[in-house]
Length: 137
Image (cartoon, rainbow, N blue to C red; front, side):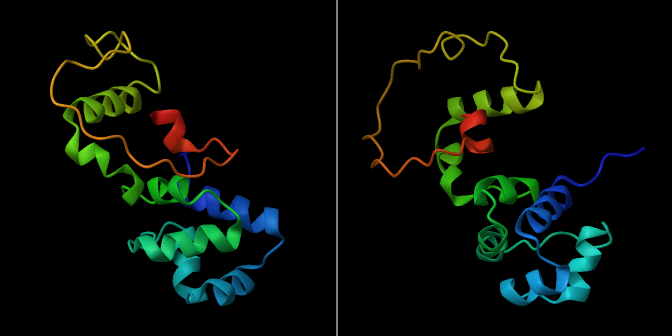
């Protein structure tokens, strides 16, 4: 049996969790029910617009970042991946090995190589839900 699409699995779990029908969900999210039915059946790709994916997550009570990643997109919160080659390599290594970290030098020991430091990012509210983004980083 082939594994199901992670996006469809999360959406279906959200529908069950909220007790929503496909039509009711699509009405609340501003989606075409016929189109979204095809997405869940694997005949169409999930929406690519991050705003739409966030709206879907909100209506279903799901973690937006996790849903965006499940749709095959990189969320805006992960913009540091584009600027930090070491961070990118670490995330790639974790994702490629199913979360197991193999020794890669300073990163494996919890140290970053010496070099110019960026100013610290402003602190944002940390939600109690541990989503995919926290697991990967």
